[in-house]
Image (tube, rainbow, N blue to C red; front, side, top):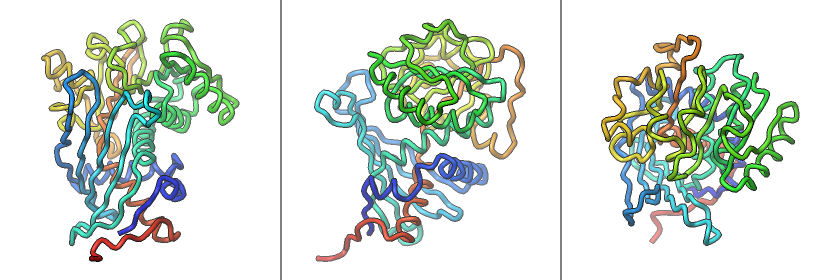
Length: 332
């Protein structure tokens, strides 16, 4: 069995957005063909408070040229920042689909971040056009940074990118980093979604906040809202879009604390309003007909099949480039 550290995972090249996005689109095609299987996510909560604090077990299989089963084990503890620890810890294990032999155990946070960003990059490609010029991002952490890299990769027409965080410190730091990388864009921190008086073409919610900061008035006609966070948007706003696109609905509706799934369980949102799933856009089965003023929401629950597929790429690169440490699982 191979063990891969975070450094090994990064060395594989999986952090290249174009590489990750190609793998996501390949996995979407496999999904449409019935070449993937996922079991129900199992959350283990040790407290009853309303937050995403939990341990999560996510198993899946991805066929085709990947042909591996695996499990993602991730822990969400928002209060870790007070202890100087990451909010999320993630590991990913891959197994041979035929024998069940454990092949690799790797640090999973890099893959998880790239998966989320690359899935959004695919969604941006299907759901935006060259008229998108302005973008607002709530959040300035790892996931938010990947979302912004995804948007700047997939929506070349963007001119203004505004970033919001609770204190503004992390938003300013992220804006500075991205400004160096994309000097031709206006990238800056803002104090609120409405601070600049802009009706944004694209909005992203990428925080673990349990208190919504995005409200109905923040979503102008013709916008696209990409939701990957927790409670970024309030229930009234989440029910006010014209079309909804998701990566998966059934996997999230039972347990997910995201606003859209909460609204469904409360009877406020009918799943019949969902226009389509992401894999249907990859195959061309679904295509949004944009009309003036239509507001669209993309909700990314987070499908572990993408982590497995990206993990397979990392594993193959590790074997070719002699990355990682071999562990003899059967030694006595």
